[in-house]
Image (cartoon, rainbow, N blue to C red):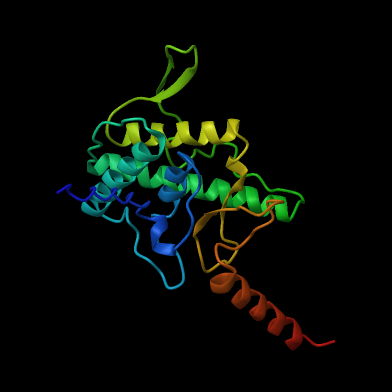
Length: 217
């Protein structure tokens, strides 16, 4: 008797993004979205997955395993320590702020106010990487480093590749000020502003409508 076929393994979802029932960003950009979604976000609020070392280590292990499954590129085990976690958290927060600021500037083009001339970014913004030529003549950007540095290198490499493919601009943060969820905009003209119209869009628009009605004529 022929044994039944072994069922295919179900791919592990992106651990942070899965909390919001969102379709993840394609390819390696899913890791960038997942890092952004480790924040305490959503309605109701989800905990910060980088809030402590144990939780961060679990997220890093699951997220890099998913990245390897999606891209077919291996990444060595990432071991985080307290200093690395601080760097990773600062890197995530800076990345979230920059994406959020870009979206607000696009929706409300006007004069911008620069910070102090000696302002220093709050987290690492560079990481090592290696350019590798394969047997077909194609060039690959390979992340490099160890621990948190390696993880940030993978994230920056994914952002760079998404930029080359002109899909990075579709990674957005929800416009609802009470929500910080990062989503991938699949609308035809890249006009989405809510991670979920039902959860954030309708309630926010309803509050704005009621506020306008309360204003005197």
